Amino acid sequence: MLPKWQWELGSPIITTPAIAIVTYTNGVSIRVEPKRFQVEEVSKEIWPPDSHIIHVARRYIEVLPHVRYTAVGINFRSFIEHHEAEIYVRKKFLKEGAWINDSPPLHTIAIKLIYPLSNGRLSITVDPGRLQEGDKVGEQEKSGIIINANFHRDCQGYPAHEQVITYLQNVKEDWKEYNTIISRIFGVNDDS
Image 1 (tube, rainbow, N blue to C red):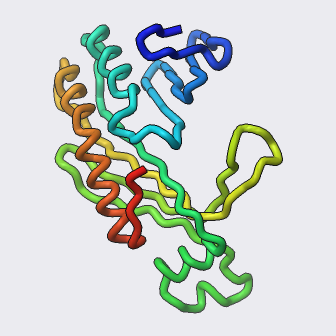
Image 2 (image 1 turned 90 degrees about the horizontal axis):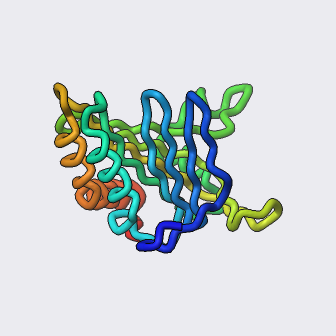
């Protein structure tokens, strides 16, 4: 248990030569691979900029400044409940034409939007989908729109640990930009 944050292991630690995974009961997981370090939190209660995962990632970078860091990705995921998500996304993003109604008829679409960033890019994917409430099979599923965003920034030069820490500190601005774009596209505010 991490006493300061009251974290407890949620499952056994997995370690192999190629990968190490630690999962906590609060929804945080840490995954280390030869060319990737990932800290993730799945939570409906925590506002992303207030999450502990930025502190975890920063501490990792501070302990291992000599690693050749090549990029930083800050990811957000949202869900907008909508009972006819496939139809809504298709009508919102796709012009009517033969590609929709010809045989076979189009079933669904997914959209990827890419915006430029300083030293990188913002990718947003929009997919109709289902979200299961809770962890147990058979719990209620909701139909809606799944939105994934990746703020990808490339690191320049070596060592890049200070640049990585600077990029991690952008999380509040990234979250604000993400919400601005989502609000502009869908006419909703996804602050929570």
